[in-house]
Amino acid sequence: MVSQSALERPAPGSQANGESGGSPIKLAVKDLAISYGKTVALKGVSLEIREHEIFGIIGPANAGKTSFLKAVNRMDLFSSGMRVDGEMRFNGLDTRHLNNLYALRSRIGVVFPLPVGLPMTVYDNVALSPRWRGITSKAELDVIVQRCLTRAALWDEVKDRLNALGSLLSGGQQQRLTIARALSQEPDLLMLDEFSIAVDPVTTMRIEDVLKELRKEVTIILVTNLVQQARRLADRTAFFLNGECVEIGITEELFTGEVKDQRTRDYVEGRFG
Image 1: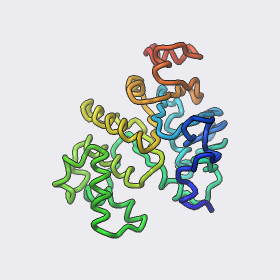
Image 2: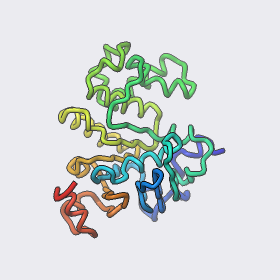
Image 3: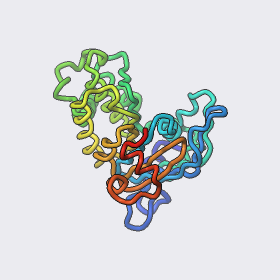
Image 4: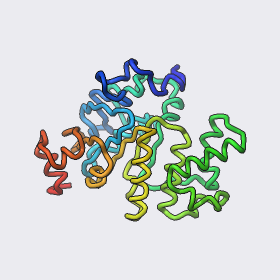
C-alpha cells in the first residue's frame, strides 16, 4: 500500500522530474484509453503536465475531457461500465495500481461544473477535510478556514456568515466555496471541470484571478469549452476531439502561431464546436 507521504511532491532528481532545467512533471499519462461499454471516450492519450502550470483542455462536448479527469482521480471506480487502460503517474507513482486511493484523492482537488455545497455551514464546508486529517484544534481550524476562503476570494463576503448554511450563498459564492473546500485538502493538483458554466461573467473573472494566484502553489488542470478562457489562463493547452488528443502546445501559439493539425485552428477560430 502506498502512503500519503509517498504521493507528495517529489524531490529534485526523482523519476517525476522532467528534462534538465525543466519543472518537475506532476502528472504523466501514457496511452490512456477509456470506454463505457462499446462507446469509446478516449483513444490512447499521452501527455505530461508540469508542476505549477495551468494546463488547459479544450474541445467540444463528448470529446473525452471529463472522462480524462475521472481517470486522474480514479473516479472510474464509481462509474458503472467505465473501463480505463494505460499508464498514469502522479508524482512519479503509477495511480492505476494504488491500493490507498484516499492518499491519492487527498492530493487532488476537484471542482465540478455545478457548485456542490455540502449540507452544512460555510465554516464546516471548509473545515471538513482538515478534521478528517485529525485536526481538532478550533484555533488551527479557524486559521485554515480563513486562509482557504481568502485564497478563494470569498473571505470578505462571508466572514460574518460563517455559521450560515453554504446553500444560502449565491451561485458564484457557492462555486468559490467549493474551491475553498478543495484547497482545504492542501492538494498538489487542482482540477476544474467547466467551473464557470453556472456563474455570471463577473464572478467568472474573479475566479480566473484566483486561479492565476493559485498556480504559484498548486498545479491546475482547467477543462473548458470556452477557448478564450483557456487562452487567458492556460500556460499550455491540449485540444481533444472525438476521444483523441489532437494537439498540445503553448496556449498562445495554438491561437496565433502555426499548428500541427488544421482541426485545431478550425476549433479555436470557431469554425466548429
